[in-house]
Image (cartoon, rainbow, N blue to C red; front, side, top):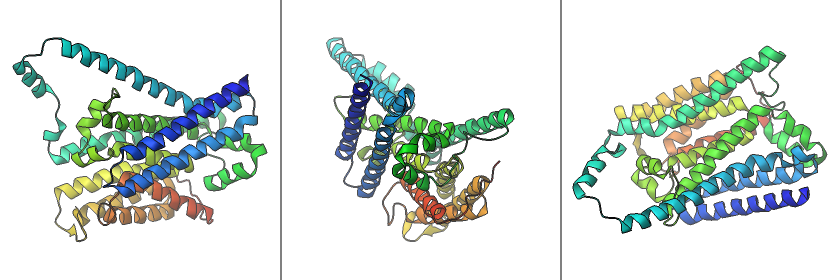
Length: 368
C-alpha cells in the first residue's frame, strides 16, 4: 500500500512539473529568447534532479522514502489548491457583481486615487521598492543561519547541520548517482540548513510561477496578483517579472552551492544589483558605449560592493572571481545580451563555483 502511495504522489508531481514547463514556454514572450531558454533549462534541471533523488531514496525506510516527496509535493499541492479555490471565488464575485448595481463613477474615481500607484513614483524610489524584497530575503536567510550556527555551536561544539560535510556539491551529487546504496548517508551530510534553503526558495519559486501564469491567464487567479501587477515594469508584463527569475535562479544556486557561496551569490544579486541601478540612475556621467542604459559609475561601484560582500563570506580568492564575473555580466546585460541579471548572476556564479571547486581550488570558509 505504501508503494502505491509513493508512486501515486511521484507520478502526480512529475506531471505537475511537466505542466509547469509547458506553461512556462506557453506564456513566455518571443522577445526574450535567452530568458526563456535559461529559465526553462534551469527549471528542467531542478525538476529532473529532484525527481531522480526521490526515486533513489525509494529503498529507504518509511520516513526516508517519503521525505523528499513530502518536501516538494506539499508546497505544490497547497499552492495549486489556493489557485483553484481563489479562481472559483473570483469567478463567483464577478458573476454577482454583474448582477448587482453598478457603482457610482465618482466613487470609483475616489477609490482609484486612494490606491497605491507605484508607477507614479520617481524611478529611483520605484527601483528601491522593487528590489527591497530581494534584500530582505537575503538578510533573513543570513540571520537565520547566524542564529542557527550560534545555537548549534553552543550546544555541540561544532557546526554539523549548518554546512554540508562535502563542500564540492558537484562531486557529492555525482557520488549519489554512482553510489546509490549510500544515498541516505550523502543526503544526511548536506545538513538541515541546506534543506531549509531549498524548501523556502522552492516555495517562493512555485508561488512566483503561478503568480505569473495566473496573471497571464483569463480563467485563473491568485491572491498575490495585485502586488505583482503594480510592481512590474511595462516590458515585464509581456514576459515574466523579475521576481520570478530571481527565485528560479537562486533556487538553482541553493541546490548546487553550500550556504556561504550561496550567500555571496544572493548578496550580489540583491545588494550589488541595487547599488548598480541606484548609482547609475543618479549619475550617468560615463555611459557604457555599447550599453547606454548603464554607466561605468554604477557598474564599478556595484562590482566593488559585490567584492566586499563575497569577501565577507568566502575570502579574497573567491571574492575576486565572483566580482569579475559580476562585472562582466553587468556590462553585457540587456545589450548585447538581452537577458535578466536575476537569472544570469546566480546561474553563472553557480557554474563558476562548481567548476573552480571541482578543479581543486580550496573552498575557504571565511566565517566560523
